[in-house]
Each structure stands twice: as C-alpha cells, then as structure tokens.
Length: 238
Image (cartoon, rainbow, N blue to C red; front, side):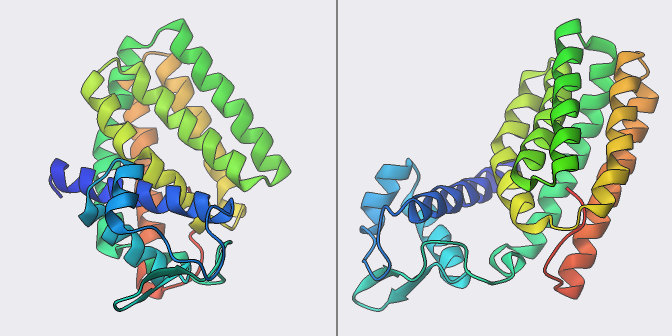
C-alpha cells in the first residue's frame, strides 16, 4: 500500500471514529437525517470521497442507513451488536500492520541508540498505565496506554518522518483495537514483551529491541490474519 493510499484509508477511519463519537454524544437523534456530504466534509476537514467511505462503513456496521434520494439517516446512537471486523477493509488492515511492523522495527532499533532519559521516562510511564489498566480490565485505557508506549518508542527514534507516519495511522489503530480486542488472556503475556523492549532500548541494544518488536508485532499480525480468515468476533492481542 502506497503512503498516499495509506493516508486516505486512515482519513476514512478517523472520519468513522469522529462520526461515531458524535452519534454517541447525541449530535443527531435516531431517525434524524445526517447533514449533506459536503457539510460533513467541511466539518471533518476531509474530502467528500472520504465522507462517502466513512458513511458506507457506518452503514455496514448498522449505525446509519442510506435511503436513495432522501439522504442518510441515523439508526443507532451506540455501537450496534455487530462484528466490527465486517466494517473494516480486511486486506487494508493487514497492510496497515505490515507498514506498522516495518516502521516500529526500525524505530525500536534507532531508539536503542538515540533515546534520552525523557524518552525512557515516557516509556516507563506508559508501561505503568498499561499494566494498571490491564489489571483493572479497563480496555479503552489499556489500548490508549499501549499505543502511548509504542508512540514513545517511535518518538525515541528522533526521526520526524517515522513519527509522522505513525501518527497518521495511530487513530485508526486505536479505533480498530478498541473494537476488536476483547480477550485479556494473551495481553497478560504480551506485557512481558513490552517490558523486554523497553529494557533493550534502555540498555542500548538495537538487536534485542528489534527482536522484541518483531516478535510482538508478528504475533499480533498473525492473530489478525486468523481473525479475518475465521471471521471470529474478537482478536486476542493489541
């Protein structure tokens, strides 16, 4: 997937997340017609094609319904009881993870060489929040802390392009993982891998940092691929 295509796909995911947020907040009541595509595009700061893609995803997920000649109407103001995986472009998600794997592998190796005390502190703080949220079974907080940790690793690479690309799809990752990650079991085991990654970076060992990253993200991608193949409702790792 080219960077331009990735950015467009991420914009659609971000538009879906923002519209879901507004629907949940009651911006539009159930049965109410949504504003025209052009108005939504201006409100979200994206193109009309992105809005159309987001509305298709919301329709597939049961949030809205498009009526020919009448517009798009609200069907639900909370997440419908449906498999979120069906609203995602399955091949696209694998491609996003392929990009993520390559990006974070390089970032981890660079971070082991370039990290500062402030970088290490950010990683440690994210790990503490991640562990706390995991113990309390607070999924949204867990996903946020998990992504904060990975963001801290990318930031520690001190490469502005890596940081920009990670930022471009982190919102889509958060939305996807919040919806898909349900089983806490494998997350307990994965915490040790995250700690090992932080320690490798702290020790200035790029090979160990890269190995820990590859181990974690390869396993995550494999789980996602199995989910897509089996169409099960939950992926086990974030």
